[in-house]
Image 1: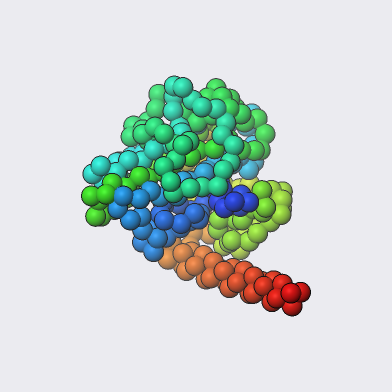
Image 2 (image 1 turned 30 degrees about the horizontal axis):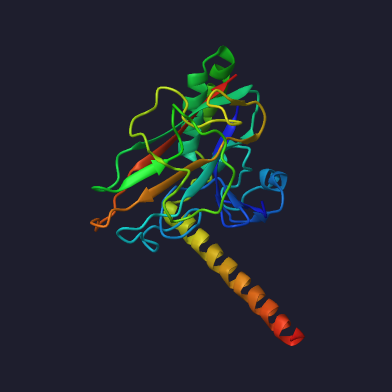
Amino acid sequence: MATVEIAESNGAGETVTSGINDTDVGSVDSANLDPVANPIQPGNNSFEKWQRFNVTNMGTSSEVKNLKIWASGSPTGSDSHVTNARETTYGGSETYATPTDANSTVATQAMPTTEPSGANLGIGGSLTGALTATGYSDYLVHQLQVDAGTTTGTTYNVNYQYDVVA
Amino acid sequence: MSYAICGKCEKEYKTQNGYLNHTCDVTGFTPTEPEHQGEQFVRQSIAAHKRGGSKKNAKVIKGLEKKLDSGIPHEVSNKIRADRVKNKKAQRVKKREKLEAKIAKKADKKK
């Protein structure tokens, strides 16, 4: 049985927190952050999230592949949730850079709000890639960009899906 | 990468293997076991194996469903888990501040 978790990278030296509990975004660059204590001011952005699927155990399985990311819900009003995950014109494997709260130059497309028909996050730089041993996927980068007129936040889920081949 | 942190117990490891082989204080499992992530992840694992198809996966799914039926023993309440994480985070910040103060003191002495 394959075991998969989500790992998040933070800081200039890339500290990796494995098996994160949530993907809450906020005004600090931290894994498992408290969004109430670290709210994003209107007109500002969250710090980017740099996350990867982490296969910690392949068990008797041969492949982990077909990575899909999408949100069940949308941000408030004119806020936008952007990501590098996409089914077409995928930019390949990104090199880690310290997360920023400036407009992301990596996460530039709206987060899908329905399940993509195919993979939208790659492995080894390719959407058709597969992990055949323990290791990481490409980085998923996403950011919440809050509109100047927004006064309240909201909650919705981000789905991380993968397939396991025996 | 400077170091890896377990998202559950917040212990720091210099290598990925160190992280993978530790038995988590919070969950009682190693990160190589699906139970480490809790019931929701076990359910996701079942769904991922189902999508993968094949008879071999069916056996794995049966095993995972059995684990779910018997209950994931480490499932502590979110509040307890959050409190543990908060305390450990505070301890880490304190430790870092202490170290930074020590370094600054040393640097002053050198001057």
